Image (cartoon, rainbow, N blue to C red; front, side, top):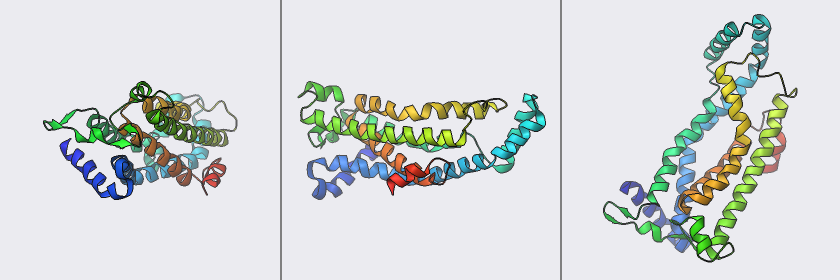
Length: 254
C-alpha cells in the first residue's frame, strides 16, 4: 500500500500548483480517470456484447418456438447459440469487478493512520474544507449539515443524485424499448439469462445506493465513487447511444 500512497502523493505534488490545498483530491479524480481509461476496453466489449444479445433475440424466439415447453432442450440450444456467437449474458459485470481493487486501495489508504510504520500524511489533505480521511458523520459533528465540510458532502450528494436519476430514466427507457410487452419474457430463459435479467431490474436503483456509500466511506473513497459513477453515466450513454430507447439520453449529453 505504501507504493500506492507514493503514487497519490506524487500526483498531488504535480497538481499542487493548480489545485493547492485540494491537490490530493484532484489526484484521486485523476487516478480514477486513469483507472476508467484502463477499464474502457472492457466497457466497449460489454457494449458490443449487449448489442450482440439484442441481435440474437429473433433467433432466440425461433428456439423457443422450436423447442416449445421443453425447457432443458431450449437451455441447451441457447447455451450453444451463445457459445457459437461468443456472447456472455454476464459480461457487463466485468468493468465493475475490475474497478473494485482500486476502490478498496483508496478505502484502506485513507482509513489507516500509519503506512509502513510512518504517519499517514495523506490524511491531512482536504477537498476544500473536508479532510479526505473523514466521513460524513465527522462533517456533521464539525459544523453540522451546512458547515464548511458538510457543504462539500451536500455537493457530492447532489452530483450522485443527478447521475442516479439520469441512469434510472435511461435504463427504464431502454428496458421498455427492448421489452415493449413487459411480460412473458422470462419463460424459457436460461438460468444465466434470468440472473442477468434480475440484475438488470435492480441496476437502475443501484445508482441511488451510491448515496449510502458516499456517506459511510472516507471522503477520498467517496470521491472515487462519485467520479467513477459520473464517468460511467457518460460512457454508457455514448457506448449505448444506438441501442433502442437510448437516443434521448445520448442527445442530452450532446
